[in-house]
Amino acid sequence: MLLKKTLLIAALLSPSLFVSAHEYTAGGLHIEHPWSREMPPVAPTAAAYFVVHNKGAEADRLLSVSTPHAGKAEMHEHMHADGLMKMQQVQEVVVPAGGEVKFEPMGYHVMLFNLQQQAKDGEHFPLTLTFEKAGSVEVKVAVHTDAPASAAPKAEVHAH
Image 1 (cartoon, one colour):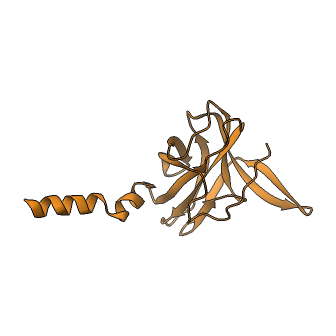
Image 2 (image 1 turned 180 degrees about the vertical axis):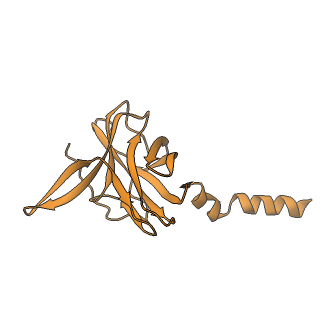
């Protein structure tokens, strides 16, 4: 009996449990570690990030994002144009077959507007990703004071 309890405790404390708790699957898509940076309480916006891996044989498209945490959620991308860094909304993001798309600082990201309140470090909020083929999947976005070690770069500025 003691051995069973010890094994149960070891399984519950296993790092792999924490990793899998922050990974999601929709069809052939695997969504890895959705996160957002804690912002000052007066900040009007926030951003969410994650990685989508497509293990399928066909491309899929992320068509929309939504959350009850914000009045509006949009997919955006940073681009270099005429020597300047610009940010623009995108209507869809293609996830190639056998490939991945990173939503990260200075790349694709989800902008959250009209926030009821800024989330704090350690909190989570739901984000629904709707794909053309894989359908909708709700993920929990973890809020951190800094970017997780797996995310780079650490510097980020949003001037919306």
